[in-house]
Image 1 (spheres, rainbow, N blue to C red):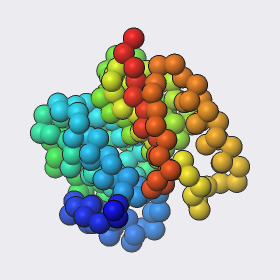
Image 2 (cartoon, rainbow, N blue to C red):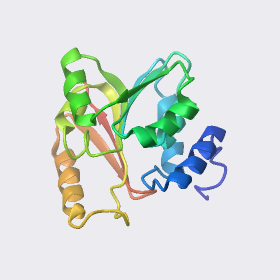
Image 3 (cartoon, rainbow, N blue to C red):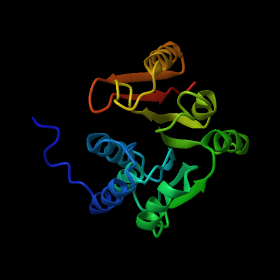
Length: 196
């Protein structure tokens, strides 16, 4: 089995990647991660999705490809340059809302509203290395929390491996989450919030 064959990459992802390369942005999710996100999104009909760290919209496009027409997604990004590419290619989809602000501030605000999500993909610092409790608080019981880049990356700052190890240990110790670590793609963790 070759996990890179027959990914059925959405055409919009190819368009986004072309523009992403032109601006030199290198923080996009891998195609295999996108395929996984699409599959997981399809498991949440009528779902409420949160994508923290839109970037140019690669992971968002994969999530949209798996979502049904009654689902909705909020995607959060504070960099207008990169998110403008996502808006160009995904902005006409009525299921998506773009929130352009600091993701940590967004999580603090949304936590106060009581809104909850069926699936959260945390692809930036907030919701992962900061504001983790806020992110997990707004995850519905049975909801999926997904993070990537848990395996060493060439763009990691010095000492980042210690933050990764601490985050993994913190997630492993939680009593309210069941998690699976995948030594695959860029390193994925999928966690499910248990109903109490």
